[in-house]
Amino acid sequence: MKFRAALTALALFPASTAFAQDCTAYTAEDPYDLTEAEIAAFYDCLKESMAEGYASQGDAVGNAYRDWTITQTAPGLAGVHGNRLLITYANEFAAEQYLQYAEDITMPVGSVLAKESITLSSKRQAARPGPLFIMTKLAEGEAPEADDWLYAGVQPNGKEMKIKQSFCHDCHVNYDYQDNLAYPLEEVRISQ
Ligand code: HEC
Image 1: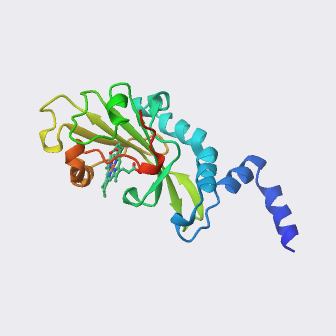
Image 2: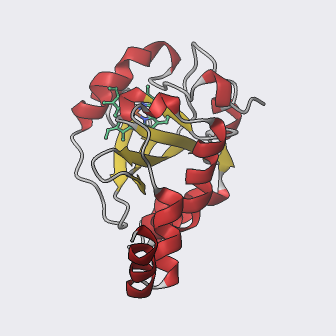
């Protein structure tokens, strides 16, 4: 019976849909049970379509960030940005300083960090692209209440996320001793 149901399902959906579902299937009870290989597989499965999504409505960062410097060897699982796998890219102004993961710094004006996310949804039992989170360092005095950082986000469908600056900054300010940057998990950092 089971076999026949599977055959019927295959007949109803085009092959590409079936494959996409296969490689995004997420059934772990606890995301921290995922192995490195499983995390890598989710990223491999979604990396092309997620970049296409972020770029699809013409967002400048969404179109550019994949050419920037990648700061991680693998996606990191950090609870704070939701149950999400995260991977951060740094633009040409940010990369050199960012890759030192140092304290007591001020990032150069024009620095942009863009962080991809993959949402692990136990409800849908699938890994799906989440927002692209963005931080841009403005000129001195342009956003004094946020140490001159501008927070932004692009939805997986390419549309701009509505963001309250204080929502992002109230948490990032916990890292004000390193210019409000939290940095990726240590085990996945690429250092310079
Ligand atoms: C509850 C705390 C919290 C909130 C709220 C939060 N962040 Fe973060 N953010 C973090 C942590 C922790 C990291 C580092 C984790 C990682 O990347 O693995 C991070 C990393 C980042 C990075 C990569 C640069 C860095 O800090 O190393 C960007 C970009 C970013 N967040 C943007 C945003 C935006 C935009 C918002 C608001 C929509 C936001 N964050 C809200 C905690 C938070």
